[in-house]
Image 1 (cartoon, helix red, strand yellow):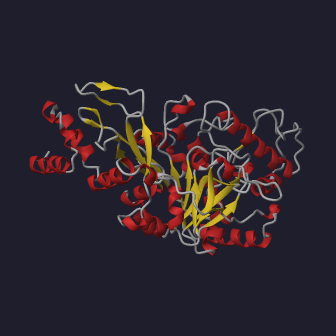
Image 2 (cartoon, helix red, strand yellow):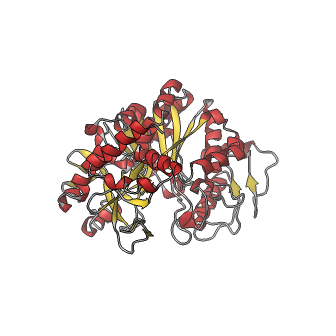
Image 3 (cartoon, rainbow, N blue to C red):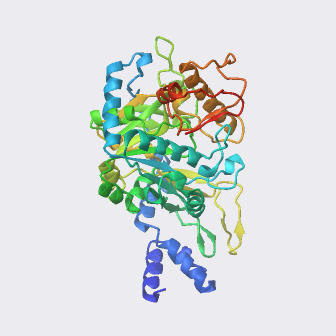
Length: 479
C-alpha cells in the first residue's frame, strides 16, 4: 500500500465532505485498511456529489417520474395478429445472415442470487427444466450450441456477474466444462457497485472497514461492458450486435433472427420485444412514446387511469409490456457506457434499509429506510437510441421467468410453460398427445434445446426420426 497514494485518496474524501468513510482508519489492521482502500477507489466522488444534489438533497419533485405527453409506443405486430407476413420473413432472413456472419453475441445479466427462491447460489445455477432439472445456465448454453450448429458461426456469450456470485458462477461453468461451448467463448465480468448514502448524502459504512456498496442496476451493464473490456473483445471478433437478456427466463428466444433483422433493417441502435399485458396491472414496464422519444415507464410509476385505459375495441391502450429482451448496437453501447455525461443513463433513487454503524461504531439493522441506493435501468437507453424498434412476441414463446418461490412467476409456473411449449411443438409435428382444457398433457416431458429450440426445428427433427420415440412421463428428447 503506497502511503502517499493512500493519503491522497483519504484527503479527496475529506474534501468531498465524505471523510467519515475513514473515521475508524486508526483502528484497522493492514488487511482491513487495504480492503477499505480498494472499496473507496471504486467510488466516483464527483458522481456521488452530483447524485446527492439531484436525487437526495434537491427538490423531491426533481426526481419524480415525468408522465406528461405519454402515448402508447407503436410496435410491429406478429403476422397472426395482423402483421405483415412478408416483412417478418424478410427480417428473419436478414437476421439469419447476421448470425451466420458471426456478428452477434449473447449477453446475460446474471448478477442475482436465488434468495427469493429459497436457493443458496447464483440464480443461473437454479434447476428449472421439467424433467432433467437442468439449470438456467445450462438451458441458455444449449440454446447457443443449437444456434452455432444451425448458423455455422461461433456465437460468444458474455455474462455479467456480481461481487456476490462471480467466483461461484465461474466455478459452476468450469465444473460443467462450459457445457461444450469452449472456455474461450464464454466471458465473465462483474457488475459495477455504487455506495449507499444516508438521507443527508453521506456515504454509509456497514462496518468499520466496509462501505455499504450495492450493484448499480441492470442499466449498469452498459458501463460494465465498456469498463470490463468486453466491447473491445467484440470489436476484435467482428461483433456489432449484442443480444441482451436476463438470467431468470428459461423460455427466452435470445438469438431471434426476426428481432435482429428488424433491428438491422431500421438501422436501429436498440430494439426490443414487447409482450401484450395479460391484465391492466401486470408487473411489467410500459413501452411509451414521450415527445418523440421511446421510453419505458415502470408499472409502479404508471397511474391507474393510464394502466386501465382501453381502446374502442376494448383492448388495453397501454398494452405493450417490457420483458427485458433487447438487441443493442455495439457502438451505441460503447457511447452509452462511456464517460460522456450527455449520453449516460440516469440514476434512480431507491430508499432502502441499509445496515450501518451507530454513533458508537456498532453495527445495526434499521427498521425504517435510512439510506438511498442508486441504480440504473437498461431501458433508459431507449430515449437515446436512434430508430428504436419494438416487435411483438407471445408469452408462450418467450416469457416464463422464475422470480418467486411460489405462485406467479415461480419454478412451477415456468416448468408448466415449458411443458406447454413442448406439447404444442409435438402436436404441430403430428404427435397425438391428450391434453386438458388448458392445453397441458397429463404427464411431464422435456425437449432439450439441442434436440429442438423452436417449433420449426422440432417438426423437422421429428420427421427425420425413424423409429419415432414414445412421448410419455419422463421422456427427454435430446440430441
